[in-house]
View 1: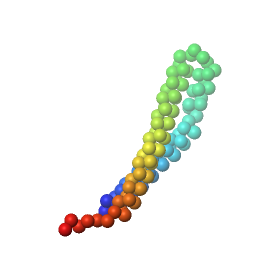
View 2: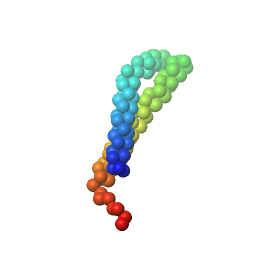
View 3: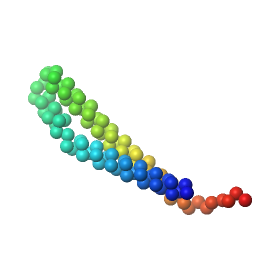
View 4: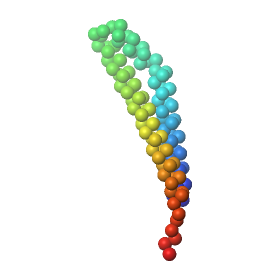
Length: 97
């Protein structure tokens, strides 16, 4: 029972982690607002408005990167639970009599 639960929870965590990594990567690659803010800020040095917009884009990019790292760690925990479930399934049960 415990082995099966570990495997199911681990598979769910692994799947959610992979989805989170994929979604974060897609958002990073398709973030045109970041590239536009970076370009405008580099062409207009000293302009407070453009620099503030670029700083906001950098914060958003940081959250996207941390989301990808968090998904990777969640997936790693899922793999650990799957392996733990495999080990638990091999341990013989004692009836306690």
